[in-house]
Length: 246
Image (cartoon, rainbow, N blue to C red):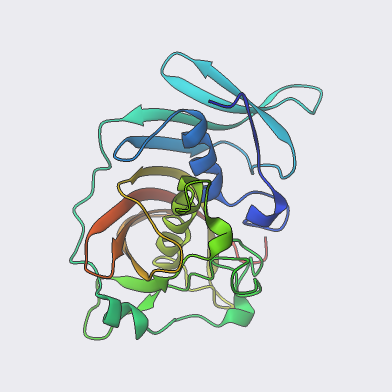
């Protein structure tokens, strides 16, 4: 397990900080989280890009720490959990996800260069996940994901931290429309489990939904399924609403 984690600029969320799901996945890998394991990651500050973050393993909590300033800053904290507690609705089919209608104007997206959901990213460079409403259903959002070959690890399958990124933004899209008068949402905590192998070039479905909202806090769920409906990953996330111009 690595003693440092560096978030490459490719994997940004907002322009100057890391995508929350990717950062969570990178910390999970540093913790030795494997397929079928579940982990809870809390982001404490926006993850800096291109900085060697120290992995501090102390008891049940593992921390990413930025030592570049005058004082160390805890960027994220992770701990193993028994499971991702979800009661998911029926996941969207591949056809439903393919025909889902994206309910926001891409020109109003607050973070157009986000690795996972930014419309300003070129195909293959970003994931370009745009979860939309599903016909005849009012309980879910869905999108199709076809992982690019550049996202593969040494074994040829999609790297786990990329899967965590895919389990991130579709949840935010279930509670934020990104319109001119809307708010954006930023990931606070994600509890996730990567359940199976994800192959490059294959089509997958991400289904997301709102679990609860209270004030600026929103809770969402996401499941990742293959074309046959087999679940390969899931997440439960806490989001905090911020002004869309931030």
